Image (cartoon, rainbow, N blue to C red; front, side, top):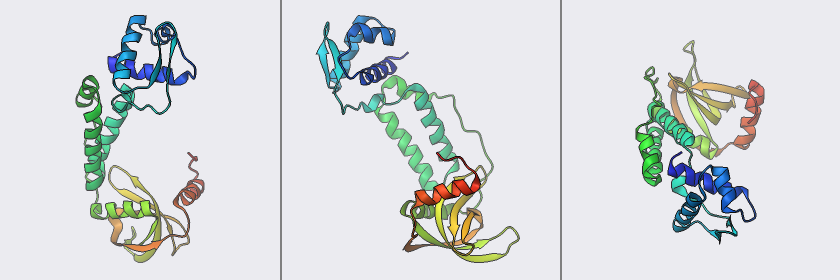
Length: 229
């Protein structure tokens, strides 16, 4: 276990105890020596942790302490790296850039040994099929979903028939080769799925749809037989 990981575990153990816990108990839970516990507690206090107590009496972590450089385990870091790399390769340009920037910000506050793990991560994203057209509109669609705004679209179906619709976008699914907007369609009065590469034109209206997105998302999951989260 790296020192950064050990400090994180120490914080987690202290959080589990509401009352002062002895150094011996901490050492036993962490599988380290009592001297190591005392040294690590001193390090945490230097970094701003509000830990009350002293050797022979016990220690307690006061509420509200966050330690940004140590908030992630090694598994969590790998999950973030893998997810960020997938988004950077598969999402629209603004979201791809945001994923890269987010990972850089995380790396900037990590201890050196954990920061090295990001660079040396063995979890890679393999090459995929070229993304279909429609990339330019995805950022606008994502914003409409976030703000619960109606979209006016011109849509080309698989049989090349064209329709104009007003939809309430509630989700955006990212697949290897294309993206799909999940929406309530005013024309069909039902939930429908629209591939972004078949949206010939999109206009974000100033109108918010009349129902909250979480409610609509729950109804869509029920209609599709998807387990609720």
